[in-house]
Length: 408
Image (cartoon, rainbow, N blue to C red; front, side, top):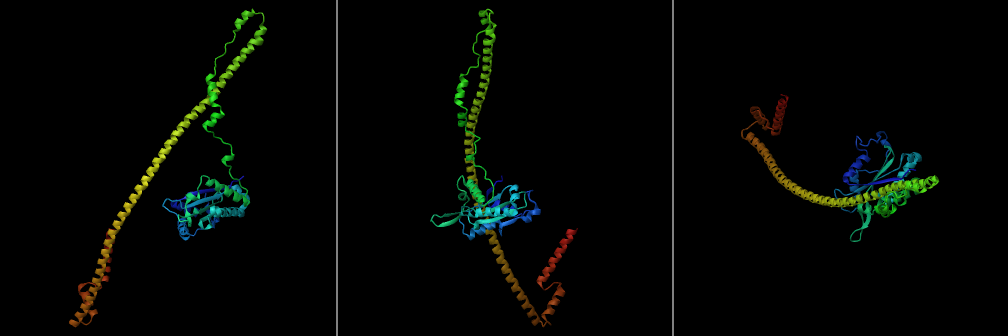
């Protein structure tokens, strides 16, 4: 019998970007060797995301005014994978497989009143070993704020609240998919299976440990004293060998047999007692290790908090220094821009003055025309009167010299 499989993973922004590259087949070289690129065109969407997962999240959050404090390491979305084994998909065929994934999609839309608007993407992959669907959704809970107003809040912790949250999900999904006509099996719960592990106290009770320890203590392994056959022979004066063969020898053999069985029983009981003694020792060590583990967790938590505090301090210091540097650079830039604007005005004014000066010279000394005067100036001084053109020629000469140096 095939199983209805549903898995969930919580994603931060960083993990969501990795999921987007895999699900949307953005990578040129796939790390997953099970992907058959020739079948990628068979993949299809039940809900297609127009943007990347992160941008879709930001868009939905803004559009529906979703509340909640979102930090850089916050869980912002969940990724569910729906599938079964290849045998199941082969038996039901392509169209029923599409209905299976559509019903799985419908299930999540209604689960905990999530709403289809909070689903980011649902894509079915047909280019791997077994068909499966990746469904990304924002864990939104419908709750109230401190003033009693109804709000929609992003909170993975509350969405998956309770130690049985995943078990409840599995049960609800199996019920839904079974009602839709898909013959699948849900794994048995531990409550209805036979337990394979017992506590030390339970094992003591099963093996009657305390009584066994007392039996071992009181048990004597020495052979009991029996009459010596030689003494009996003396009494009998060899008158009757029948008593020796039919009574004495069989009883003696029975005593020897029971003695050997007694030794074997002692060994077996000793094994059981030793197992429990070792188990108690291991239990004591486990408790000690557990206590050490709790202490280490507390230390790790303290180090984590100290690290976050230090990170915050460094970040604030970095931001302060960055602001100071930006401020200083901005002052310099503003000063240079001011100077540049002033120089531009000076140059523009100088151009006007030169033009007026040329006109004045022509008039004063009765020159034929301004163009003739400028042409004579350029001819005699070997300079271009147009300053911009003169700078372009100069830059061209410099570039030519640099090319010649590079060649040599």
